[in-house]
Amino acid sequence: MPTEAVIRDAIARELELIEPGMSLVRTEFPLPNSEGSRGAVDIVAYDRYNQVVVIEIKRSNTTAREALHELHKYTELLMAELNVAPEDIRCILISTQWAELTRPFTSYVRNSAFNTLGLSAYVNDDATDIRLTPVAPLDDPVSVRLTTASEILLYSEEVNRDKAFQKISPLLDEIGCPSHIGIRLNRELPFPGFPFGLYLVLGTIMPEDPAVRVLDYLCDDVPDDSLEANGDVWEYRALCHLNSQSLGLAEDIEIGYPEKFRYLTSTQGKWQITAIERAGAFKAQRAILSDSVISEIVGGGTGLSVTFFRKRSSPRFTGAWKASTVDALNMLSGNDFWAQALRLWIDEFEAEQHLDDVLFHIYNPTNFLKPFAYAPPSQYMEYAPMLAVSIVKSETDEFCRGIQGELVWDGTITAESVIECVRDICGEPWMAATLPVDPSTDSELLARLKLRYALFEIYPDNPPMAIDVVDGGLVRVPPTSIEPASVVGDGAFEIQWESIAPLANFFHVRNLELVELWHEIQPNILRMGSQIMYEGRKSGQNDSACP
Image (cartoon, rainbow, N blue to C red; front, side, top):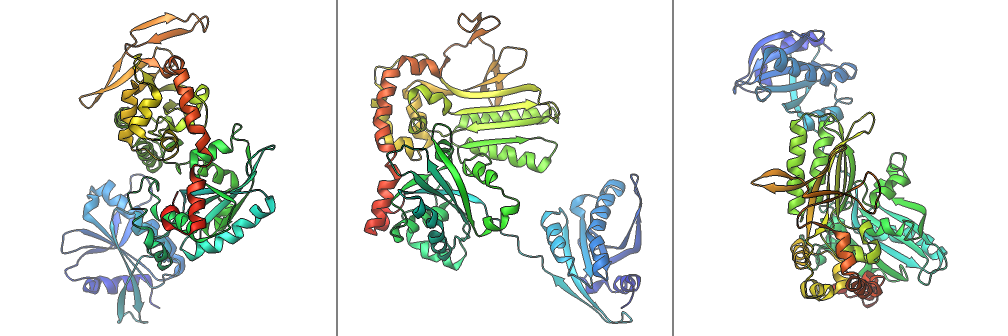
């Protein structure tokens, strides 16, 4: 086979082989480099759109590995040293061998800012016959993630629970959900209910998979905008189908969701993880996706939850930082005040060009009643909505400043009881506490109870400021009074703003009503999802199969 230089010169003489209207600038085009070694592009040309075309030629798998490095280098030098605008640059990679090049070329095309063409070259011995064939990038890899579609299958006997995953996996595989996990849970004894559980979580379903067509009958019952599906519509349909078609899989079934899993496996919940079973992609990922990471994901700690988000990030890592801020803001969907204020606060932080770390910790259920599904009023604060974003030094974790969001009360006591408000706006309290609630319903309930979302900026050495959004900008409001605390002790202060009282004050004043509300909710909680789903399975009625 001819040398690269011979192939280069032959192609340079016949650029029409690549595309009509292409004109040669020169071969071995020199590029200066003020930061290192210079470069020489095999061919530089102009196309008929007056774009600069960088053409690199390779003739073996060994040199092909260098090709993308050279494209990265030469495009950067064109911009940095010759001030060519990125939108005026194209790249063409020609190689006689593509075995070692196709996958990295695909990644380059997917992530590069430059229009890039790959051509496979046939060249005879004296380079008098050259044929160029376009090389298509590989299809985008299919990424599989854990979704929010989950449920708890309950058993009285451990041996039956331990066999369940092997029975369920083939059924899910048949309907286009080959990737899923089962987390074995044992309840601390004594316990009057079913002490053995399998927490089933489905992985991503590809709607274009022909096997998924068996789920089409559920499109009316579970529409694309279903609140219950939390965006994982096909996976939720798969759960509905599984529960309506598969008799005898469990003695009872309850709906699962990240907050519930987190509570069950906490000290208060008293369920212990004994093993995690995997199928499909999650089985293949065992070496990089540990059991502890899976538990964290299922509990919502790394983005699975649509209400809970925890992440450490930094503007030093541009792509990860952008993704983190988008995820944080998405987590505040339905809470317009917190979302708008956080966006403005992040804009301020970015404008200051800090390289510190930022810790995000957000819980935004947009459902005042949801914590009553887990705990009595005396423990509500552990599950109350909260927004905490802190700027810390990356090396020392020293706190610089942050914002803290919480529910507050305006101090007004309404004549209407709490449970009357809930029934009037939300309907059955236990349903509202356990199923998704429209954010507008939550806002209406909070307004009737004289509660609202508030934000405060926290500093290490100065009193906090209340934050408001006025005319599209952040306004910081100092406290109306700062008095020495009579209860906490020396060095502590009670900080107050007008019409802002802690949520704890509301719970203290209306404690009896809130205890009544909790007693209204709790007796129905354990049977919430299981009755609907289990009865649907026994009757075979698709209507009642969905949680």
